Length: 600
Ligand SMILES: Nc1nc2c(ncn2[C@@H]2O[C@H](COP(=O)(O)OP(=O)(O)OP(=O)(O)O)[C@@H](O)[C@H]2O)c(=O)[nH]1
Image 1: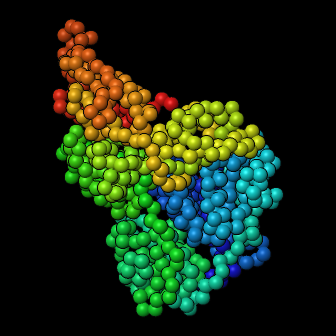
Image 2: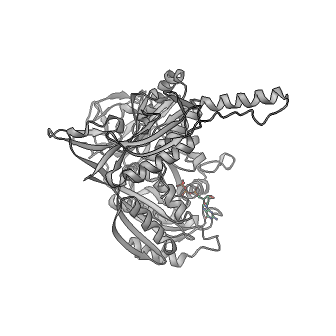
Image 3: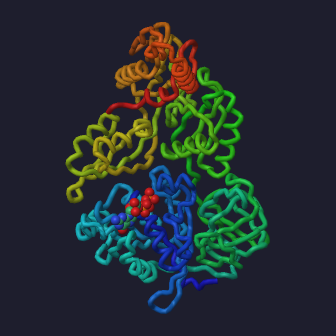
């Protein structure tokens, strides 16, 4: 067991791409935690999809042993936290398990929106913060300017910030010394007290079952102990305890201040509650740790198999994915248009994409994704309040008194030149400007926006109007009443429920027109005329007509080249597979998403 004063627990906070993972790799490498031949970049991102997209989804931890200049060997426990806005709540939770943070800022870019959001989370968790300026090997780096910016915008002293290049390794020893000298050791913690440990995160391993990452606050955890989860009441025998280096290595025991894993034949991640207090069954601790609110899904959409025969496979795949991800919810849904599928809830759009990608790639299921929606509060005239997850379930408007929608506070950092475009974008999305300040040549804008207008393609639009220079972060602020209506789309006079959306009354006409125009381009011509309409209640607010024509793919193949004709017809058939029939009309899969993209 390591004495408390020789332990340092920390996380790294950074904006995406500022070098968090590269720095973690360097720290691991320099301390010889991994043999040189086993070194591969991004050691901590072990899920394929994380590695591929360069994002971290679940918290990971690694234990590093560092012989410091003062002659003592320290145990450094690094918790790697997710870096994307969707997972902000997970970041806040993992931070409760450590005492300090390295604040990594790319010295060529400076402070970005996520730097701010993450560093404030660290400050809220009472962290000591060590600023680290990365990428000083690049000619464009300007450490002095960025140092000043950290002081002006964040308000912490950056005069002793470490100047490093995580890529070349310059300055890494200074970071290790700063961790030891500037970050506090964990406090308190009697190894003989009844066990009190925090469940920091849990994940599913196909060979070992559920692995829990734990931080010991008091007492000692050993293999063979019988433990109790104080919130869920579950009791388990501990099969193994250990640490990540970053591979799993068993240890005899974990004591106060230490971070490691435990494995106790827990069947599914859902049986564990992140933030729960773990204690011994026989000798319980008196009070539990404060615990966390569970993270709740904010974005919902329907997922349907393109081929109805895939439904059972899809159910199995979704159940498996949910085993490892308690923040992802699902329930069966039937749609008149799309048949059987699932209504799924996600933490954000990236989370949605990750799950959808995994279903398609790992389980080989072609999916139709319906428009993402948020949760509306529908206040009925009889005083009851209903949560609306799916626009298709909207109750009869005559029974509704009023509706509320979720709003967010969005923080956007953008170079001056693009400020006008950003303000226009936020204004177009029904935003209310709350603040506009400058940090050097960059503006920081704060907007109050409806989540509904952001979940879909706001981030893409923001990136495109600012050529990628803007950064964005948000947090939920609550519900507010507004004039919202359900807009239906009718194709060939039949409503397509999967295309229903909630819109603001004042924008309904514009949105309806844009959608029917898009659909006209997306739906192939048929042998008959197809009216495409947008309607509110029974009233049509926009209409386009797709004229009749048979698309003869073989028309260009005059002469007798039969094989080429056959090939083209087969290609047409394959293309058809991705379509769904609505009455007599085929609607291609991409229409469900593309039709909703707004051009501003
Ligand atoms: N030139 C230079 N490039 C660097 C340095 N550190 C990181 N990079 C590069 O910057 C990019 C982003 O680095 P990552 O370590 O993946 O960034 P991250 O912050 O972990 O990103 P997320 O995991 O997506 O949050 C990679 O292409 C790195 O090779 C550095 O010191 N100098």
